[in-house]
Length: 143
Image (cartoon, rainbow, N blue to C red; front, side, top):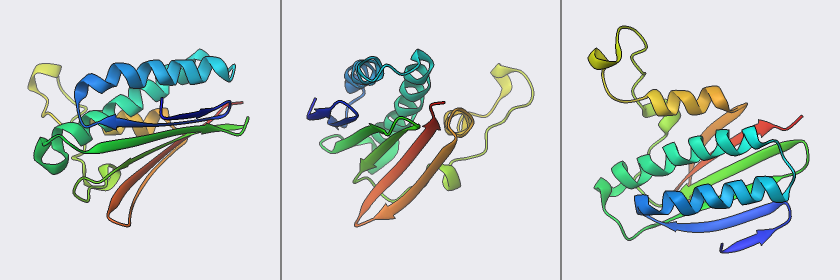
């Protein structure tokens, strides 16, 4: 881990899907260290996995060599995650295709379901472009 305090975690991932295991372990450790509900580890791991996978797979045409900064922080009332990357500007909540929720799985169009789930699993999910960086923020009330 690049930086950790009792209520804060910051790490930089390589733009590589092999980093997802390290991210999941860090999220689980953070949740345990802060004595938060295990369900939060599941929710945040799933959401962060989706966002990082999209950055690695689609950002900069899928090219590696770029860092993805992930921050987790809790104030005791809310758990908040920030994902920052230098890929091309892309707001997943505004630009990702709407998921096809009808019909059977085999006939559905691919795309948008992961971002849709992120929005459903979090109390707040937002994106902004700042200083040439994408910044995605997720938040979930703890109580």
